[in-house]
Length: 436
Image (cartoon, rainbow, N blue to C red; front, side, top):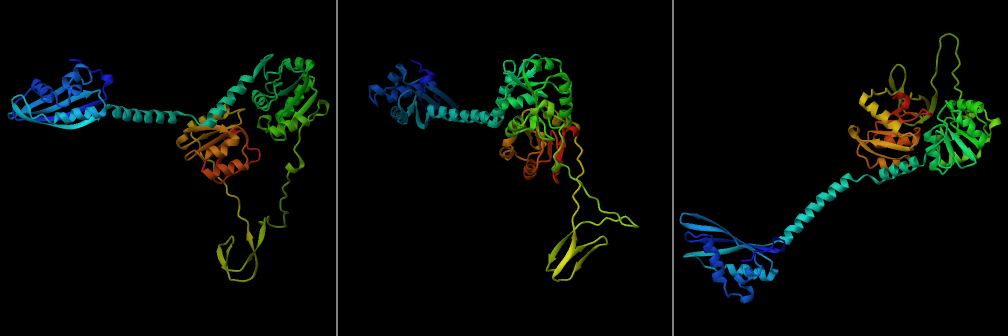
């Protein structure tokens, strides 16, 4: 009796039987072969089908109780659906099992391929769900790729971080640190060398004797100090400066090339001073004789209905009338700084250090979960995809547009490298590296 390979089984016939007496498995098998013989012709004879392997091993489970037997019959089949259905219907013509009257009822014909398809679909859903869950955001992958490429372009030239063209170019641009090198590489300026801060190595002097040197310095006090030291150590040809109050690593592409175009001979370079529009003088009100008084500025407001009047002594109401009255300006709201726990402060500080030179922003969600890192120019689009954003950490200075964006999505903390414009917010705590 041939056994059907498990891999070739297409259908399974499942049937129940009831016998009016005690019967065993050989009785049921004998009834299946004997009473179906010749019903469907020689091609579908049960013995022949099993001999050729188109019907597999017949499983029979019997149970006897109170002088009667019942059980289940399972027949695997590799025939097509129509032939399998004929075999199943033939089973119900059997009316005796062994010496007892019996009745067989086909419960169902199960398509094993359908079962496999259901398993495949469900398993594929689970695999796809895990794949999507673990798939990083496109912006994050893109930024990591850009950082890897930019970092890979930084080479070592005479012990200094530099661009790949620093050794072969006849002219070089000196900047303060590695972050500045990365920023200029991003804009295609590859003959750049980092001098490493205010402690300038002597090799810079040797380089200045071999090449045309342009010093591209920050627009702050540190840039002035480096300029003085460079003039003592190196033979500078030109000096370019970032706008007052800005660092080279904070500049846009337009600002970088504008500063380089407007470079001046080193002999004419002096300390950078703020423009006149940036120096604002505050005029205090004049003192009067006797008691020192200060009158708040007032604005004339036209009213045509009952007006609320606020004074030092209380609140009253003025009768309807046409005219003007003086209404004091409201004083700016003063925000008390929140106390940061040490764990959050440490996270902010570490993330700020990691962002140096990347021109990127890190976003943290509720409970300080890291949501991703994106270029600052893509922050407006990416922040809206984060549920309940808690903090934004910038590689750069905070400006009013960034503060408004953060206020709009409910951010609690905005951490930046500096806050030169002293921007404030009524709902956000703005922190700088000094605060950490």
